[in-house]
Image (cartoon, rainbow, N blue to C red):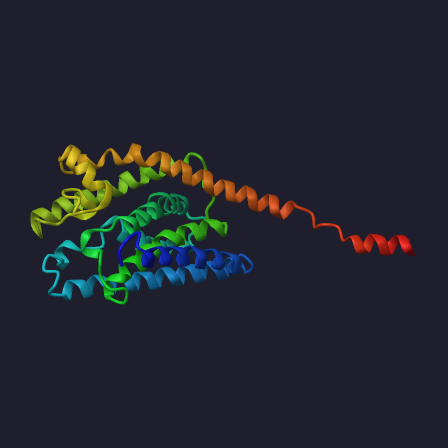
Amino acid sequence: MTPFTPTWTIYLVLLIGVTIGAWAVLRRGSERRWRAILCGIAVVNVGISTTFTFNRIADPAYPDFVLSRNWPLHFCTLVTFLLVPGMLATKQWWARPLHTLLFFPGSLAALLALAAPGAEYIGHPLWSMNSWFYVIHGLNFVLPLLHAGLGGYRPRWRDPLLSLVWFTILAMVVLGITVFARAVVDPKANYMYFFDPEGSGILVVLWHLIHIPVLYELPLLPILYPVLLAMCAVQRGFERLGRALRRTPPAADPTRGSSALGT
């Protein structure tokens, strides 16, 4: 699959359509039911991601894709795993920070990966194992949105900024592990692309402009903040539309009025 081709466009349209259909069906059931279903989908996604990773490690066509450089520490992989508790969490102290992280940078990172994947994920046949990359990131994209649409998370205006705070804290932890891995395990370990963009979309542009490991990613924060604010505005707009539709009274039946006058 290749971004912005007819196949990719059809996949994205189907993904969004199925998500809207799932929202329409799940909103009629209990919260316990839809949380269990979303968690089940997240668990399946973890299974797909793990299978995809080990399949690629075993494939001689990718000699640089080795286990020592593919611990589950890239941000999108972390999102895949964090979606499992995220779909179930409700009132725990960590629930809202987790939901904020998944809804804002989590879903946006997945969408960016779908639109601008690395070169090694482009141009493969639709039915190849490589297409699972698009399935994994597609679910990373829609699950937080579906969770929010069903009422599991309601963004506030301060949440986009807070999401960048949580993202930065997570990135600092991953950076520490990456530095350790480069020193002890594999000098080419590169989680969250701190030391090389590896062909990843906007990071390539920033790398050409700054070309300093770690620091070249810092402009992402002010660049992404307006996008996250727009996501919050869209979500709150849909919430208001939903409330307005629920308050709208049913249209009067003219036949009932005429029959009443005739009696």
